[in-house]
Image (tube, one colour):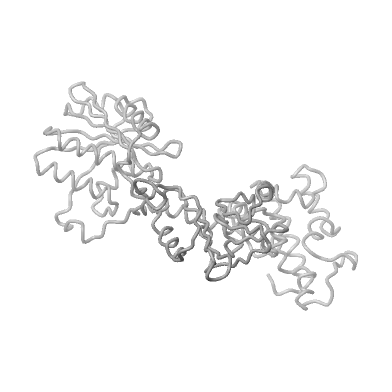
Length: 464
């Protein structure tokens, strides 16, 4: 930001339209002397587009409500006023059309100056074609109305195989090995057709957001298509994914790809082609499975083409929403003036979640971690007790810090904890590290519970 200001002064610039400014750990551009910053008003949202007015004599005001990605302001007086818009469009896989629609609403004035980063090709800014970015279709469950009548549902199963000898004993010359892979954030699938000793490989690219489960099901679907087109009278399809095979043989499956696979099996049988499904153990040195595994990884890493499958799994959407919620939670946690005691133990909500997701957060432990409970300081603050001091000396404030680190009445229990931790006299700085260690945390919980139990008795609090 300082470099921008220096360059602006050097060039005698009056305005700067910026996109995706680096704002460090914060969310907004900080104000500087001699500069007015127009950006999204919500400080919890990260600024992606902004306008900085460097000329103090320039009359400037916002037009409408700024968003993180689009900000519009006007300078000058009517009829000589000019509208300025700074915009930033998120890169793929975000759809571009909503941004364009919002931008079009902002620039209805004849005198408009627009500057931004579109992260896409579009005829709006002189490209010969539009970017094909679209909203990603989310994988939906198959409704019961699309499935067959229960009495007519496909009945099939699969056979587990563990050795090369068991595979060789299959009574068909046509064997199709399938596999899916997700590696380095990329997803691929492959089919290896073995017929009369000859190997043929087909590779398929899936969008990066696709799961390995989708890749496994896509590979089995592709194997069925290969069989259908080959005209072979019978074939064995071998997969190392039990979950994919279980979904396919289930008459109650709602997964779209599994549903398609069942329909293809029926189609093959109606055409007189016999299909047998087999499960083989992964990474057991079975040649056909290893070949499919290698091909699936190559498809994920090296196949340069439009994805053969692009539907987004619900699990991916849930993960994105969870990450967004956690990021917003972290921002609020850091910026809030509340939870000062809790922040001593946990630097982030994620740390607290990891600590207690499989543990039992008791009433008494919660009082210690929040400072809200049977402490004289807390009770005095809410006029439930006459003074906030501790009986140990009638002078020290009885709060979390005093009870954990200083109060001589808890010295013996504190010494036991210090011996377990092994760092000498325990400090407030040690507590966050203690909460990160499951074994040490267990000893701390016992120590904290003893203290709060004593406080509740002596302060005659109803918090128990």
